[in-house]
Image 1 (tube, rainbow, N blue to C red):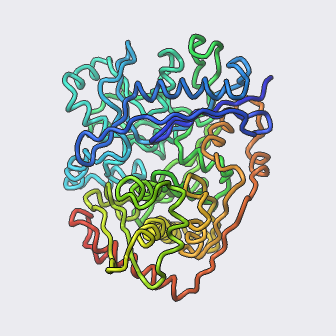
Image 2 (cartoon, rainbow, N blue to C red; image 1 turned 180 degrees about the vertical axis):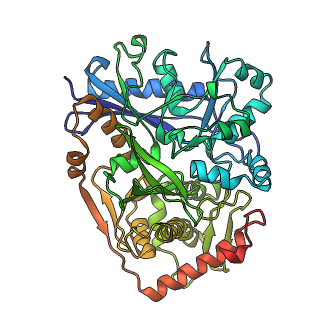
Image 3 (cartoon, rainbow, N blue to C red; image 1 turned 60 degrees about the vertical axis):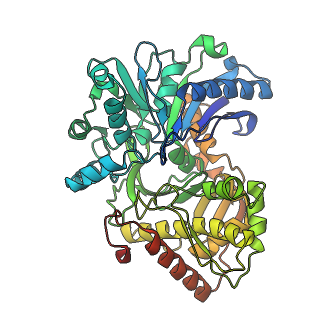
Length: 505
């Protein structure tokens, strides 16, 4: 059997397809950006049809660049931007509305209403999540309420709902399969992660008919076969995981205590807690890391909404850099005597604050502050936010070692300056792997191992290779002063909607 595995990596700003050979090396790829829509303040949408066409184009490009065809591919693995939600017609496959993106904040009033009704504890106990617009459940409720006739059509069984992976599976299989995996399901606010099932009580609160939702499968499972008309031959879909979970798998974080952080548009840190379903007391998320062979592995997750997006803001918003990769070099030129802090709450603050109403702010500006200080503040904000997550994880799970080593991936990790500052602020080593395509690799491994052409977990983990380890090189007093300044800046940024007085953070 051929060992070629195709990974579809459907992200927030672009779709990619990567073809791996039997040695797990990249042999072909394609990438295509798509349009971001901002119909109102705090709203973010994607056109599902544009996402679909971008996926088809990138798959064709990956095969073409590798000089292969669909018949050479043993299986497809899919990884996707999580929490982004689509509702489509069961018969035609046509979406009833643009996809509502994970960054979107339009359902903040609904979340506040449910909190005031005292329901957040119920949601957290069952789903491991907090009531926040970030998650998919409130997006389904919004569409059913706001799109004319949608609720009645859903009740009649005419509409289907799902995250991007489900929409792609439906389209790829010609409407034969409506499925998702346990990781994507765990991000919806209506999936009971202890029972591994959709929760009828939570569905009733949102008024979501259960028949709209996909069947939930293991991450390595049978998700159907692509329609032959798409790529010229049928291909089995054997792996699915949300992007952050796929990255943890690609980083071979199979053992409890292992931690990875992905630095893309946002930043997402996952700490493997094994079979322990750790209920956070520090406003982190409890989530499903992955589910294999019916066995669930859990994780603590900290979600930061703005990481690489802060660098995009430097480039596109205030135009202090021409290219994203220039940010590290500019930051290195900053005046060390200035203490400028950027709290990048452009779309609210994620863990551990979960303040949907907070907005970005800059503190410590002087007359001499300029582009270099802005660049350093933007990059340091990522390190400070990661430190907040790591501190919370250590409080929540005593088994988390004080000697944690962080495995990193994502676009920002190419910057040596940023990774060194991350190690300095964390006071912990930061490991950058030789293969940075960890998200796509994780999806590919799920499919490849299920197909029987790639190694099982233990052997796959042995193949993980270090490119560079960044060790802390900042004295304790400087680190303490920087962290104190950061925490003061965050307190001044939090809104009165944060759920607790600012000084209690």
